[in-house]
Image (cartoon, rainbow, N blue to C red; front, side, top):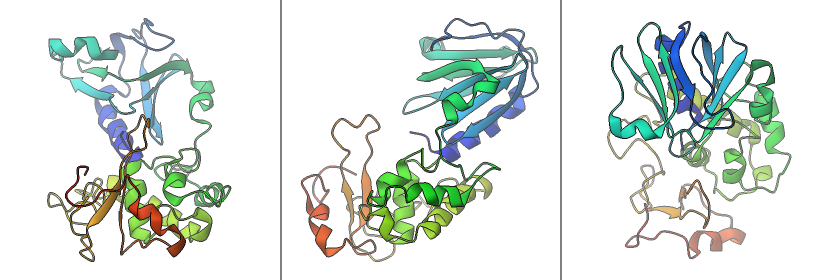
Amino acid sequence: MPEGDSVYRLAARLRPPLDGQLVEAGETRSGTAAGTSLAGWRVLGHDTHGKHLLTRFDSGMTLHTHLRMQGSWTVTGAGRSIPRRLIPQVRVRMQTAAGPTAWGLDVPVVDLLPTRDEKSVVGHLGSDPLRADWDADDAARRLLLDPGRPVIAALLDQRVMAGLGNLWANEVCFLRGHYPWTPVGEVDVPRLVAVAARSLRASVHIAGMFQVTTGITARGERHWVVGRAGRPCLRCGTPVSVRAEVTGDPERRRTWWCARCQAAPAASSTEASGPETFRPGTTGA
């Protein structure tokens, strides 16, 4: 699933070919407004909140999309189209009078709603570090509403703080030295929020650092723990552990951690040796 920083970058990529342009031909092909023509609408701009993309038109309408696990956007130049085999996956098409065409492929969430009603689709979200209205105090307050909740679960909750996906939740836990299942009420929450916000911002604003958490861009060394199951921790050399995704989780999330750098409290030591935990020589990475 794309993280908030990848959707933020997507919006930045769509702005040059679309913003200010008149849609000459196009439509939505899924969602409750499937079959609605977008022709004659001018794109005013793109905005994001967490993992949600908002495309606003001069018609007073907003196209709300969410990529979830499988969706993507691509733009073709004047007179060009996507490969024929991808046509059945098109959920949104916007051909501009200037030439470029934007294609929303296999996008699972496609909503058309009055711009004034955008809160109906994003109003439940917590504050987003990549937005101008970012509120760190509000994020900290929401994290502490359920102090017994595991840190990893709280960070993934978009109602608490928008934009952190599985990659960033795991990496932030490592950066703060937290065992992922530590109750959030037992950690320095303001510091946790600050590290999460700084990480997302660095990902989108520092050249070459997109989703790089170690500062190293070499293949296999971009992340401290994510995707490194069984490999030596880049800090201490301890093999990185991973807990397999929870059965039935549609997002197929896994949790990675270093048992030394993120030591479990003694009372939770069984958490790190449960039946779903990866050990060198078994499958799962």
